[in-house]
Picture 1 (tube, rainbow, N blue to C red):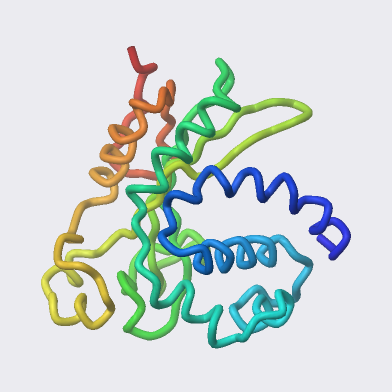
Picture 2: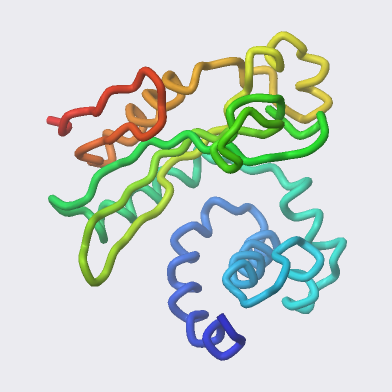
Length: 213
């Protein structure tokens, strides 16, 4: 999107983000989040921290510290997100979709990286894997989809090397779980938010989950 389109979206985005203000202790952190999200939607050739910061008119170092060093409490964000989605997009046509996605990465330091099946490249590759629960519909003219839950898959080899985990800032409580177990935990977490049907897509060992009663 160009600058004019982004400016036109700012009032609606500000109203949306306001619903998550309680998740941030400091106003400046909230403002960094707002700037970051706006520039992710911008028509930038590269959407890394430096071009995002320059486009937002803030110091690169300041914005780089925002995703790298601030503590994030996902448990505070998920309930309002799930409630927002259910309040505004719940219908008989929407379903939850479980998807394990591999993304190619180089090196050995990124959390969870190892040689494993990578959906992005379609082969065994050095990559990280995220397990996601999407919420989507099949509306012919106004389709909707979003991520309700996303978790890093930490392979067994990482779990067996806690020094490596600590060096990568993986907390001790994040231990090995097979992808199917992560997926089932995501489903259980979302059922109170009235997600009605779950379809497993590429998650070994997870059957389709019938409508919640």
